[in-house]
Amino acid sequence: MASQKKIDWPIIASYILAALALLVVLGKGLLAALFSGLLVYSLVHMLAPLLGKKINGQRAKMVAIALLSALIVMLLSAAIWGTITFLKSDAGSFPVLLKKLASIIDASRGQIPEWLRNRLPASAEALGEMIIAWLNAHAVEAKTIGQKAGRTIAHLLIGMVIGAMAALYDTTTIHNYRPLAAALHERVVNLNLAFRRIVFAQVRIAAINAVFTAIFLLVVLPLAGVELPLQKTMIAITFVAGLLPVIGNLISNTVIVIVGLSHSLQTAVAALTFLVLIHKLEYFLNAKIIGSHIDARAWELLAAMLVMEAIFGLPGIVAAPVLYAYVKKELSDRALV
Image (tube, rainbow, N blue to C red):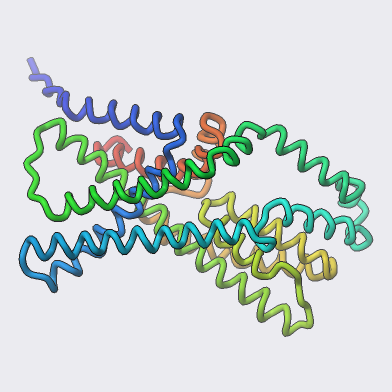
């Protein structure tokens, strides 16, 4: 009789605990803390080996990594403050942007083909009412975002501190884990690896996309005698929205094409053509930067985002690419996919 394979209970328990932890994170609004902690943890792990080559002595290395962690936390905090300041300004205000887009559509009706014009709201006021209706349909998410803005910022800061402390401990201490602790550590390492691959790769893609968009808006169009409004806002939206795989491009493209209508229909069509060409190029970048790391196609990420949005709302959209990459990594390590 063939011998049965021994069940590795610590590993099974680690998977159950990891799944429960992720459910708590998504259900209790702790995603910002988790991602900020993983970001600091990843940055420290990436930069710490550079210090190790130049610094001798365990104590000196610990002090150097502690200072590095503090510097990373301060820089990220400054970036968060700058983003909040931008979003509070007229240039980055979401309500102000929606109002301007509604006015552009209303003023550009004469340039829009009749078949498309008939499908648009009758006026800027009607478009505003349609946007309000959409916001009311998502009132829970919108209200939560507004009420918990300060709490989310606190979560970001606490998460960064926890990530820095975990990275300091991980990079300066010799570990002798017991079975369950070792299995849990492996889950954390895999989650961090998935986060690093997805987020850092998506930041590169978003930056490339923003650079091409800036060249088009600030160089190509002005050379053709076209000066569009909201140039800086559109570049910022392109970068921020580009951090979301697949769906981010749809958001930024819609804004740019609508603003292009403020000049002429030809400008809007030229903008759409340019964006289509750029995104065709990005398919190759996606395949190289993201697909090669987690072997995931765009439709897989989009399907994961749709499912996660249906279950967890807006946080699910943000978490979906990382969690999908994490689950796929775990399954791949077990030779299941």
